[in-house]
Amino acid sequence: MGLSGWKRVGVALSVVWLLAGGYWGNSRGLHKGDFAVTQFTLCMENSRSPDNASGGCLDQFDRDYAGAIKDHWRDALLVGIVRSLLRGSWSMD
Image (cartoon, rainbow, N blue to C red; front, top):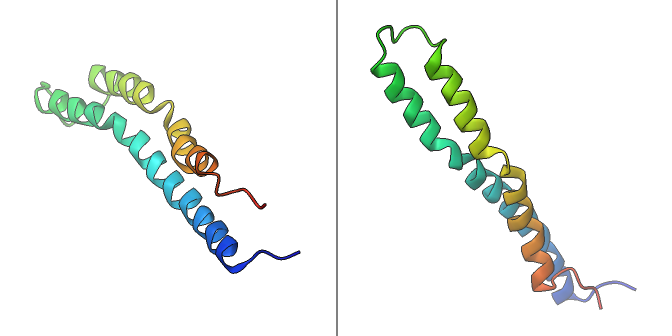
């Protein structure tokens, strides 16, 4: 009970999309924290002692970045798996 040629191609493309789409979605989710990096850099440049990374700048960065990227795995899941399921490419009938 093997798959026909076109169904094999569909399954292979679905697996490729699962991996590539999941990677892209995760990357997109992580880039939601880019503003925190920019804010940290500006904070350090305007600090009285920019060589010292501890203190208010780092504390604020930790809060901002963690809050911004907390759902990055959800983004990967939505892009990688849900899109494949909605297209119906996992159907084997």
